[in-house]
Image (cartoon, helix red, strand yellow):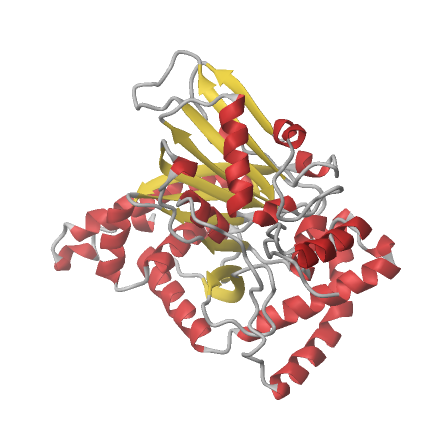
Length: 441
């Protein structure tokens, strides 16, 4: 079957649309790539939320959803009765939008972020929802009249989509892999053999080592970009290395959070050099990294930066090839032996301590996001996994945590750690070492 995973289907391309409709009539996920299939089955969700100076009513919210679907036709995929690339009928727009009134915005956005399980309860509805809260007495002292939130299955949306839609730009994926840029045959054979060895180990590990149902929580933090840039320049490290290190250092809690020796992580990146092994839907690529733990914060930051440099200097195709090949095998096996693929299987995260995702800059522009103001919050949820999503905007960057509840209190330390690093910038060089401040506490 030809892949139509994320291509938009204009009405004039009748032959393409007919083939797509025939595929989804057989199964609503027929157009999903293997990675999309996995994220759907794992009930992985993503969200976007921001305050607005404008109010919302039902008609306006439905209009926003219609614009989103026109710019991101992948939103029209994945449910029973879907018509890929075609406008949503009114009854669906009504069903996936909602508005409520509140007295104030205390506790938001954390107050309404959730695991998104409701997205999967009715398979006749699209895999996303758009909600708004409106302040009863009009804008508050900060000019915030409302707040909007988009929640979606990760199977149909990723961080780059959110960044493009925030700019009111098209976010149709097309085919993301590059058939003309092939992984060499020697590597392909080596990676395939590696996958064959890993597959049974992964299946066994998923059923034995997968965490049980654990309490999960959400936390959102916002920081100005200028101090982060200044500290990174002083330490001569990448800004993302600084942010990754601050998060891991705080959550590790002196070795009690993850490990006193090393933190096993995955981080994601966008890569313009695509290969034929890349997923046909997702632009993002996953990178594995092992970060050595240091007691001193500045040493740890430099070590994280060094590790990222070393990882990205090597061949970064291996993990993605293994992942895509393994997911293809699991999808095939699940058709024959579906009982092997329980919720427990999909909760397994490879025993990684944390997943760090830096999404493209989010800058509001155009009709779709008129009135939205910074900070902008985006995140992801996967059952049992510790995730942190970094969202840079014009003036702010937000850190969006979705993780096991016991780690969340330690996220509050990040502001103090950053303040300590800023303080050292104002000291003479001979005093920077002796006055470590909160950064090394």
